[in-house]
Image 1 (spheres, rainbow, N blue to C red):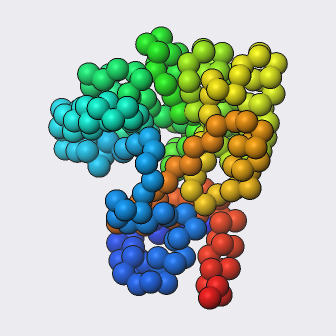
Image 2: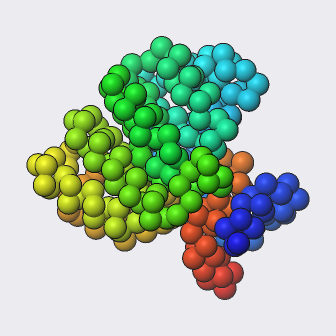
Length: 256
């Protein structure tokens, strides 16, 4: 119920305007949002949502915009990852990914473990050497499209993670769930998969101690750093994904 309410709030323009206009809203969001301007970002890989590149207008437009980004990224030896959005955009996102003329060392994509279709998508993408980020998924989806129970999502996540690590490509395991991380580490050790052959990815502001612990153990950790002025929907999805994050807001209210 709380998750659904927070997702509903993420789409409310009036609340977004209130949150983004005043310093209190920015201070509350600072736990999860790095900033709004280019200067607030760090040099890193790039993640893009195709709806921000015109996907809902025309797939060809999104393809052209993505190709331009990839061309620039290739010049600087950078890497671009296509974020996966709600299931309404999955097929179009995959079509654009396949249409763009970019080498796989420059362009990758995200797969969400909570979708029933993800096993087939992983198989198809691995067949052409795609670098994949595996996450659980944060959008509200109907039970005929996505696993409705967390235990089912977790089981599928582990299965897909094993597929990715066994493939030999450089994939990313995106989770803050200690059990998913432990399953990844155990599988890698059992198969003799070195720490240089995959990386963990986590969200800015979440489980920072765990990030440092993994780094100390020799594993790569990449932090997803959102910035820009359209941060409100992302911020609310993070609260919906883990309502315990609301505690951070309460603490920040009383922080000097």
